Length: 528
Image 1 (tube, rainbow, N blue to C red):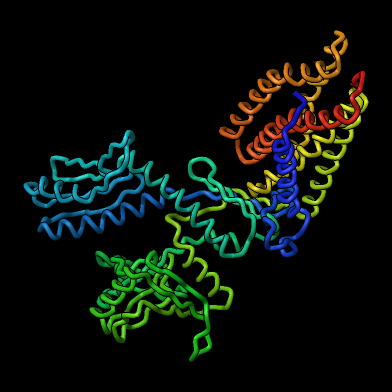
Image 2 (spheres, rainbow, N blue to C red; image 1 turned 180 degrees about the horizontal axis):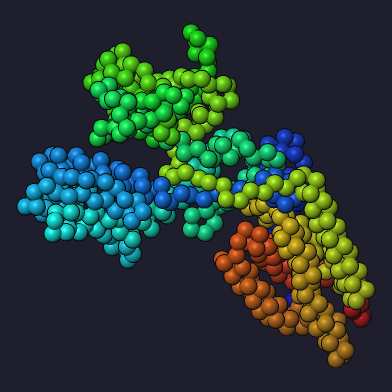
């Protein structure tokens, strides 16, 4: 039982050595770490490092409104192609529907067939799909096109997931490191920015939808009219006094941009944003500019016209320039937004908190103090209660903490106060296994067994109980991780890692220490 083959000893020492190498980067700044050493480190959470906390909500109503407005434009085109006259085509976002009335009631069925072609399939579970539109017709020729429940759920889920990815990209572009971005609930996104004390620039970046489109102007529209003609909308320019009659039809979407960079114009020395299209955008941009030479082409960002130059000649290179009253900061911010992509819906800040670095430093000191105090009391208790075997357990506990830090480094985990609480808890529970083993060895010694038999019985007969108790602990931590929020998950991760590691250190590593001691001393009695 106390015999260890050389390869087993080498494997145990190798695990400890790997743990030391993986833990070392946490003691130095990244710039001081050699290139051959893994540079993964444990990040400090918001409550330890200080920073900003933002809770954002996706405006799902805007997603529905955009779908209905796009549906209205598509319906207008379809009915015109089918030569079907209609009246009162309007979107009703409050009721998730689009309505119109067919002039000739005899064409109601033809209109229904044309509108059904606008439906998209959505998943309804079990691999099945269904149309995202429900159509109904009234006796007077009124047709209602309603978004189905499955469509609303699919669009909401897609909008939140897409927003999550774009928020992550935008924050990465700003250079904020170790940011935590996670979905919370049905329509909210949690953003934690360690080290960022003033989140105003981040809020401005995240608060802009950054939906860029390229659209033609309707030169015949009367800007003095109270309502724009069908298929046209009046959009504001850089100042409130300037309005543009912009066609609703999107010629080129900003989603086809492949790159955007801030730069100075070589002729005017003003700040501009140079952009490049992907292959699809390049082809569409070339076709539009070729067919509309002499017309004005508007660059629209979040329903505001940035610029509306006249197309002088076809632009086939897939590159362009956005000019305006830009500063260096605003041009860079716009480039960041365009590179990251447009949000599918606006985001609003529903909660904001800022943790100062002083509070974070106090939290670190308190956490380290509690960790040191807990370790000291546990070490003293084990040493006084179980003598030499207690100090073997203490040494294994130090290795346990080392391997926990290595595991957290590999995961690049974010350490928070609940995580420190989990480590402190692990300090106490990690020695439960050694207490069971030592008590069993005491019982076997009192029964008169020789030292080697008592040691073998202590390690073998206590192993089943140790395994059962730790498995139940792991099940509890798995439930906390599955159903808990961020801080609870951090606690569950540290406790679970500590539990797995201590099952190895408390049995295998301590047994190796006892084996070395026994072969060196050959004692007549055991100091336990």
